[in-house]
Length: 162
Image 1: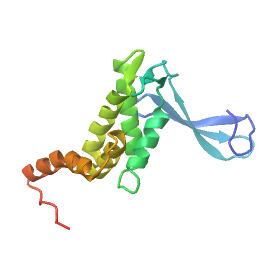
Image 2: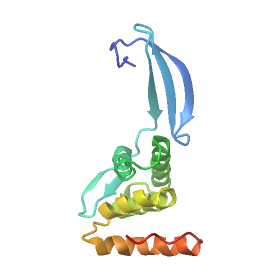
Image 3: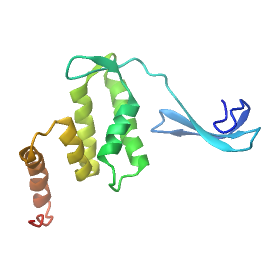
Image 4: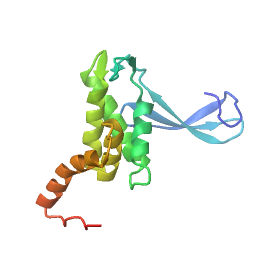
């Protein structure tokens, strides 16, 4: 492994541990040339699952695309990178466990929506607005109605009118 700082291929592994629900190994390394430390991840090679997009185009499953979408939805929300990584890992795990060759993008979107609804309602609505292609405020209201009804049933205070 080349050092990201000095580019010399001479390092030693200091620590190894499982991460991302056991689907990756995190390794702390130390460059023997410059003595700086860095982290690498080792994960299974992708098994070739394709995502079928709305327009019929097929592209390889890409965990980083899912992570980027989640990060945008969770921007400025109290959601840590570890929580985002855990969501991505659980979706990746579910995809590889249940789909051998292809998965529809609407199934992936549903998985993400379910997990975001459990994590953060604002991030959920942000993601839903892009995923479901909201056209106007009425689409937002329609999406919020079930959440508002659930929270009122749970005894929470109704939102303040503006």
